[in-house]
Length: 399
Figure 1 (tube, rainbow, N blue to C red):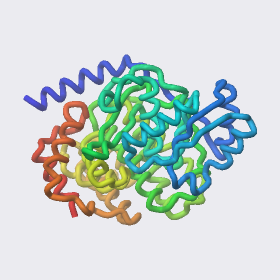
Figure 2 (spheres, one colour; figure 1 turned 135 degrees about the vertical axis):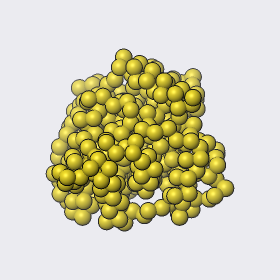
Figure 3 (cartoon, rainbow, N blue to C red; figure 1 turned 30 degrees about the vertical axis):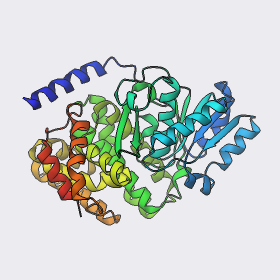
Figure 4 (cartoon, helix red, strand yellow; figure 1 turned 90 degrees about the horizontal axis):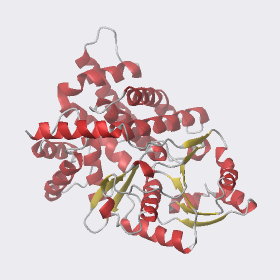
């Protein structure tokens, strides 16, 4: 009966989703596209912005040319660079205070998934000053227009530059939850591959696998549309063709651009088709142990896909064909197994572990409860899992 309830809920949400006000960000793409942002702000009549980033990006000087461009164009700005991995409520409230006290008119998210999530949290609070972040947890609880929002990804993985979600961590309860609303989609996205050329290898690998997780979970779920399937397929092909190259040769600009496109497409796919238990489990690992989201997804993905069994044979066989790792004589089951094995090999070749260290057995029951609550009934997963199933998966990924 519970599975029927979940499927009915998912069908209803998929039906309603057709009528939601989806927005796709306007793109600036290619080498040095970042230099076009000051002029874009001028055309939008925006003279004062909050830039949300992290200390690492500030230290590396990735924003220096942009800030110089702002000065030349007489655009005022303030920088919030205290964002931590798995950004907290405190991060968002501090950045919001800076936004308000500085009289900002727009928000720029500059960085990976964490600055993006933090900046979207600020946007949500600016749109709904009377609501706390906890009150906006879940689906469609922002509903008011956010300030002009510009997303500048420095990794190729989260797809946050085109998604509707802000993921927030409560540092006191260790809960990690999502705020989902189409109004959180950035208005503009700047995808400059030059910003990614100096990424450390471990960030290149885990963010790349994060993008692949988005494409895969969107594709195997039950809320696909023809368009989301096309986005997932193209993203999967791009990642299989380019992730190994950018991991070993980070200076390959075309490969970097291809990975940015893959991340963007996968983000568009899961925004409409949603994710599944991989993400639900990963969010608990981020909340409890601050495990980077991309790393968690990369480790968890093969375990969950194997656990789904024959429920994913057909879609994973299709993705295996697209990735070019099958033979014409292979059955669907063989193709599926080849795809999962390919994921394991990709992880191994990029020094991504098979398990997560530090998981405490005593924490598993609460993590199971939170992952179960996040995934069900919303996520249109190929197979509804029980709490016992989730407990088994936590044990599998626990070192």
